[in-house]
Each structure stands twice: as structure tokens, then as C-alpha cells.
Length: 427
Ligand code: SF4
Image 1: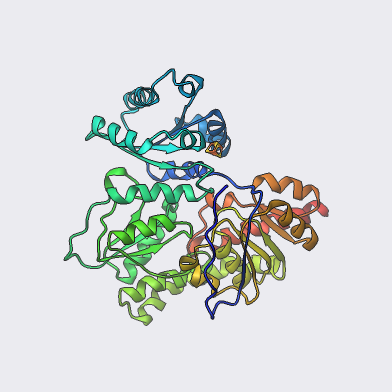
Image 2: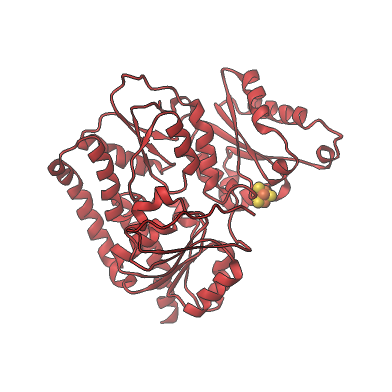
């Protein structure tokens, strides 16, 4: 069970009702992040050091991708390791060496810690250092933890990106200001944002993670970071420790979020407001047109978010402000008050935000409220459907490109789909 830090006092301007809850939780562990991270960093391999449970989790989360020469696997800690009959470090070296020989395309190898490896205190960071030396310069080996004891779902990405930060080259101290967009985005979304930043006139724009291990961006005191995802607390801290400055902004979900996110960068780089408006106008218009058909379907619909990915608050803001939905409760596994402040300020006054989870109590509240739409994990979705509640599986929000102007319609469609299906089934 993860510990919750106490929430600092509310800002006077923040009118949402935030409280914490503890108890049983129904969330993924951070290993799940491997499913989208391995697609993003195209020459990286993720080797989970864990149990059969971890291997099953990854295989079920990745679905059909397990058949397509995947770039992830599990080194299973077995009884011989646990009984001390085998030297686990030697075993790990042997498994890794065989892997690297078979897959010469790998440039970056992540040793990913799990609950079993954490509990038996296997020192993966030392193993990563040792293996990095022996494979140098062909393969870099890093480690991070995706264990359920320490990480919830998307925090696996945060841990992975934070492990990359010390590897990033140092930006020259006299370099011109650069923009670093942080958070794994689908390539199509990244390309759209690159074009928009170029049209705005921001010259040096880089993305973390890069698509290739050898292309990780430089960082330094002239770097301005713009978080593309709300769950990157450790990564942001590591980048700030290297001198970078974070630009506060809402997240690029929906037309409004995307505009405010781009505006934060534009303001930091001194882009004239007229030019900003001219560059973003076509995207805003496209997004508005794409959202129109879904507004009627989502208006006044009562939505309940279970905690899952930390995307809940930006998604709730999008549904409420752009689609006219009503928010019953917005659960989030963690709430980073600093990073989420611009989002909290946009939620309707009085919105119930719950950090953490006490599963039974939360399910009771959802049943009592009978929401029109319940956003929750796969474990809860079918049982709620059987009780007559329409549900949206939250994991899809991670696997589908949803950021930016051109994905705003797709984002609304993800929420409208279960309502639409229910209507059609009822006819
Ligand atoms: S890391 Fe922990 S929570 Fe995740 S699959 Fe392995 S044992 Fe389960």
C-alpha cells in the first residue's frame, strides 16, 4: 500500500473540495507503463525482474502485442533464487547477456523492479551500473521500479523518465532558451505539436522521451519544461535539479487545455498574442467542429471518476467545461498540488476531488449516485455494467492518442461511446 503525503492547505483561490481517502485499492501497478513506453522508445527493451504474476500482468495488459517480437520480457525470480541456491546477480547477468546477444537492435535496456525484487532487496541500480559497464558503448542499462508497492499505473512512466534524466546531455550554459516537452506522447501527436511550436516561432523544441535512446534531449538552466502529462512529479523534480524551469499550465486535453498549454510556452518565449491567435485559430476551429456532435450527448451527463491514472482531473475539467457534463466525484490516485494547480482552478467550484481510495466506500457512493457514466478500471467496469451503470475503461485513455486539437473529437468520442452503445442496445 502506498503512503499518502498530507495535503497542504487549500489555496484561497481554489474552490474545489479536496479530501483524502485510504483503504483497499483497485489500481494497476507501474509495470503497465511498459506497454506504451516500449512503443515510444524504439530501441529500448524493458526487462522486468519479477514473478510469474508480473509476467501475466504485462501479457494481459499488452494483449496481442505479445506475438509481435516484443521489446519487453520478465526475468522470473524462481525458487532457486529465493532459496539462495543461485546467485541472483549472476543469473541476471546471464539472462541479460543472452538477451543482448539475441537482440542486437537494443540500445537501451531497462531493468524494471517489481514487488518481489523490491521485497528481497535485489539491488537493480547496482546491477544496471555493472551491466552498463560490460556492454559499453553498445547498450546503456538503467533501472527503475514499477512495483505495486511503490507505483500506481502511470507512475511507472514517471519512474522510467526520471531514470533517463541523469543520462541527458548537459545543455551549453550560453545556449538560447529551449523548450522541453515531457511525457510520452503518440508520435502523431508529437509531430502535430512540433509543427505548432515551429509555426509559433519557438526554435528549439525537444521531447522526453526521445524516440531513440541515442537522441535523448539536452537539459540545463536555459531549458523550459512543459509537462504533457499530469503524473510526472519525479521526472519534473529531476529536471529542475538539473536547472530546468517548469512552465505551469493545464494539460493539452481538449481545445481549451491545448490552447492554454501552448499559450504557456508562447508566453515564456515572448510570442506576440496576435501571432499566437493566428497560429492556433485553425486548430481551435477544427477541434470545435469535431466536438460539436458529442456536446449534445455529454451535456448534463453525471460523471463519476474512479482513481486510476492521474489524468482524471484534466479529463474532468475537459468534460465539464467543454462538453457540459456534471461531475459527481473526481478520484485520483495522487494529487500533485503544484502541477495540477492550473487544472484545479478551472474545475467548477465545489467539485468533489478525492485523493487515494477506499474501494468499498467509493463503490457505495457511485451506486448511490447512479452516474450516467462511470470512468473506472477494467476490474470494476463489467460488474458496474451488470448493475446497469454505463462505464468507460480508463486504460483506453492511455493507449489512445488524446492530446492536442486534432484528437479532441476522439477524446470526446471515447466518453460518448459507452452512452451511445447503451442507447443502441436499449432500442
Ligand atoms: S509488480 Fe507487484 S503488483 Fe505489479 S504485477 Fe508484479 S507483483 Fe503484481
